[in-house]
Length: 76
Image (tube, rainbow, N blue to C red):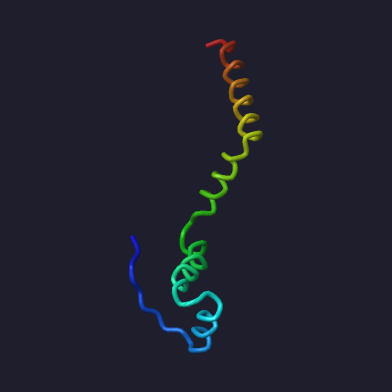
């Protein structure tokens, strides 16, 4: 859900924003700039990138399976 907000900008900044991104794209441009500074999503992006790395995931799965196999032989 989006919330509406009114902000004040210096006229030169507004004009530059208007020239750079256009009237209909200002909100999305500002949101994209602010998002990494106000939301703690760095870890989310990092975890998604790691999960997308199929070679790394295969290595991790092999390592986990080897640990399980080692624990089967452990005396209780």
